[in-house]
Length: 179
Length: 179
Image (tube, rainbow over all chains, first blue to last red):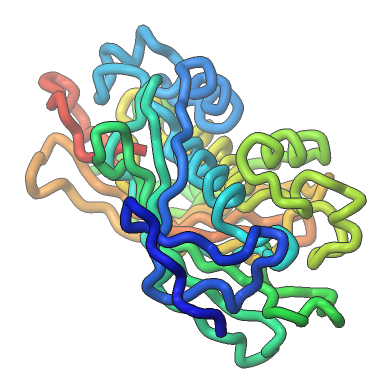
């Protein structure tokens, strides 16, 4: 195991090794991270929703004004995708990521509107080596997307499967993770 | 309350009223539905992932061949977005949808690959009128996305907030749902 991560000025930790040298052992329960921001535009909200979630309060600014949110809001799945961009770019290892079997308690807490600036707050909840295959480990991470006034708009617990150091010598061909 | 939904030839039910006349009362625990298909292409998989989940097994076909899945697979969030397209187009009411507070037990069960044809299977798990605002109701739906060989690739339980019939006379301005 590596040493405990060192704390940054804002209270969040930093990884000791870059993403392409990072493995299961570099994730420690209790460590916290903060990444971002990502900004969402009206054009991107409408583009995503037109393809995947064409409800009027996601695609039609005029109708959305009269709707339940009093204006256009992002699809909840779009918000998840924005979370994932920061999660993949800053938190996941590049060579050692084996996908995800799932997410628990996904919550859309506050509508996301055009112009919102979002940052990602993470806390490692649990890490354990796989019982069926000790070349890999499971990391559970509590993730919150927070807006420019400091309020959470999204939270979830993400399960990640990661390769352990040296475990890529003989990769299994059918890993259980799929996402 | 309306009558129980009538069963279709494939065993799934049909809504008695079209989407724009459908309200909370039209959703009944135990009803099952099946919608689709939607087909996913390599180009769409790469396009989504390049923007939201740029891991090599989602964006780089050559690297993906050598990766843990032996080929390119869709981002799990892309699979969720494809689920949502069918959910929004066929299941949600158009005027009475008030968004969603969240999802439980989201599971990516099998990798989704270019060319996969997916259909959506739904079962209404629970419906109840809101205690705090009887003009609306909560519907819990178990959703499965199933591929062309009949295997589930994604499952989750979606919570939907819906307006009750006649409840749109005096809409509250700050609904609790956000997604």
